[in-house]
Every structure is written in structure tokens, then in C-alpha cells.
Amino acid sequence: MTRLAVIFGCFAALAAIGPVANAQRQRTVPGTGAGFGEADIQAIAANGIFDPRRAPAGPILPPQVTTSRFSLNGVIIRANHSAYAFFSGDAADMSRGYIVSDRINDFNVAKISDNTVTLVNPNNQQTYLLNVGEGFTRLGTNEWVFAGSASTLPVMEATGPDAESAAASPAEARLRAKRLADINGSTTSGAK
Image (cartoon, one colour):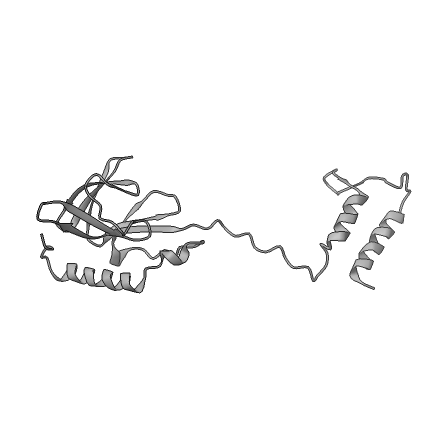
């Protein structure tokens, strides 16, 4: 005898106990007063919710949050005094140099000088002076947070469909390490 037959047997025994005024009489769930009819019993039996071999529905996962980063990679100041700032990270367009008045994420580039860039958040007029290797990080759609130098950026794992793209490539890691060694080892500025 299967467990399902036992369950049906129990329901049949319960139905036979006491007077039956109506074949379609309405049962109530104890303590709720809510109706619980024959159609509900049939639906429960058909879906096998008491089957011990039934797979669980699975865990309810929290929403996935991605981490975004960008940091100042370097500055080039040409002989004609035109200045370009280069940023790296998943939240920066690394295929171009930024000039004064350009926008990177929620910041305006206000000033570019030897190895530093001044960024201004137009929402709150907060000003940030970034040295090479320093940057910002953001979880999901929260505000950007100054994260200091690339060597002290907090390690945050990105999740979601773009998690692999958030990891730095080996080439980017080597360039970053070399640039940080140059910054920490010497105070000379780049070519003008």
C-alpha cells in the first residue's frame, strides 16, 4: 500500500465520521474559518505535496548585487598643455582619455595636473583629489564611495551575469602593480 493510498484512506475515514448533511459539505481549516473543499483535497493529492520523494522548491536567494569600480590609472600632459586622464576598472571607458569637463560616472572632471585629477560630484558639490591608483567603488546602484588607492581597495565579490568581467585581467594586474611600484618608489612626474 503506497503512502498516497494511506492518505486517501485517512481522508475517507474522516469523511465517514459524524453525520454527513451534504455530500459536497464544506470543511474549514482549524482556526481560520476558511473553506477547504473537495477540489482543494483533489489538488493536494494530485500535486503530491506529501510525497517524501518530492524535491524541495529550492532556497530563496537574495537579489544579486554587482560591484563597480574605477580608479585613476595615469595622466598625460602634452607639450601644448592639453591634459588627459586615464581611468581603469569596470565602470570606466578605458579606450579613451578624459579631459577637463568630461563626465565619468557621477563625477565631472574639474582639473587634471601631474599625477592627480580633481573630480566633482555635481549632486552634492563634493570635491575629490585622486592620485594615480586611487578610485571609487559602488555596490549595486548605491552612491560611489572613495576607496583610496588600488592597493587598499576593499575586496568585494561581484555576483550576477557580469561577475567574470569585474575581475581584473592578468595584464591589468601587472600594469597596476608596476604603476603602484613606480608611484611608491619615485616622486618624479611623467613626461610633459
